[in-house]
Image 1 (spheres, rainbow, N blue to C red):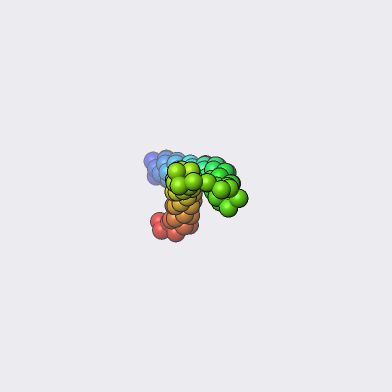
Image 2: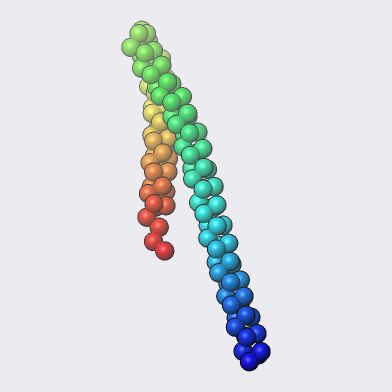
Amino acid sequence: MEMKLDCIIGCSSQKLEEIYSVKNKIDIIDFKIEELKSYIKSVREELSKKRSETDQKVNGLYHQIENTKFNASQGYKLAKHLQDALKERREMKDLFAHTDHVISRLKTINP
């Protein structure tokens, strides 16, 4: 009878260890998800700041074009600066959309 009791005690402590091991893994996953959410938030804030700076650059160029008399050469340079700023803004918007895609993928994790 003692052997049977030892097996029951041994088996249950082994099961408890397995349960604690799984719980630990779940805690690690939860921590990593929170860490990832925080990182995504900081990336989005950085992108938002850069997009705002680029928007200000675009607006400044629009105002300069609107309020300045310029020759063809100067007009070309302004148009080129505007084009570059618009491309930069598009890149920021695309990256922002990509973070939205990453967030939606995280929300739809299917275990």
